[in-house]
Image 1 (cartoon, helix red, strand yellow):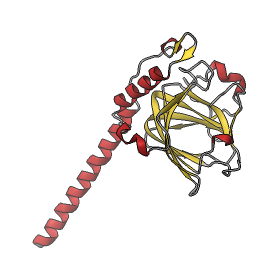
Image 2 (cartoon, rainbow, N blue to C red; image 1 turned 180 degrees about the vertical axis):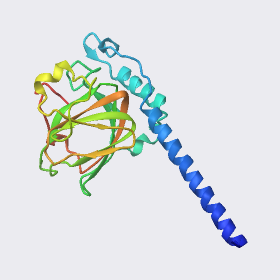
Image 3 (cartoon, helix red, strand yellow; image 1 turned 30 degrees about the horizontal axis):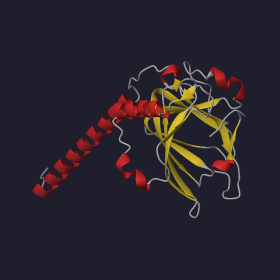
Image 4 (cartoon, helix red, strand yellow; image 1 turned 120 degrees about the vertical axis):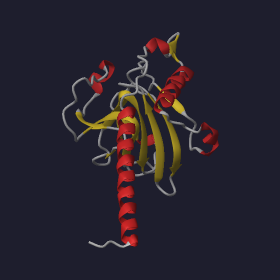
Length: 231
């Protein structure tokens, strides 16, 4: 069969494009897999408390170390443009290794009803169970979570059984009311099943760096199932 030079070049270009796409997909899958297998130190609560007081700078360092291991850059040089500074919390519960988080609110605009938030969780670290209710400033918040590095376990009204090896913090056992679990690996995304649904999140074995996309966030709308929480 006679093939013109133009047709030959088109076939060569198509084959090259397919090969490049295949290499790109393979690299993305490899990167995703490596993000799920980053090894982090096994911290103790003693690493984050001095004379009973939470040491925010030690907590920030642990998150910065996790970010470095994942090859993630917060670009703190742009912090003046963020809605909040980089913050950390133990929810006033004194159990940071198991119950705590780091975060940044990139954008939080009531006028336009949108919000962008980064969540940082150490391995096995839990954001305490909560829901978002209507306030004078905002309707009940709807949100989605996009795992950028590592993985997280999202608990709520939907999902499956708790995966083998995932252990809920003992300090929160009596306050947990939702136990359906969905694992969200690197690159995956999950949306809350309905507004005002109770939910919480835990960092996976390599910790979790998660982008949250949501409607406007008002702290006055937070309702924690643990009455001891201060946020």
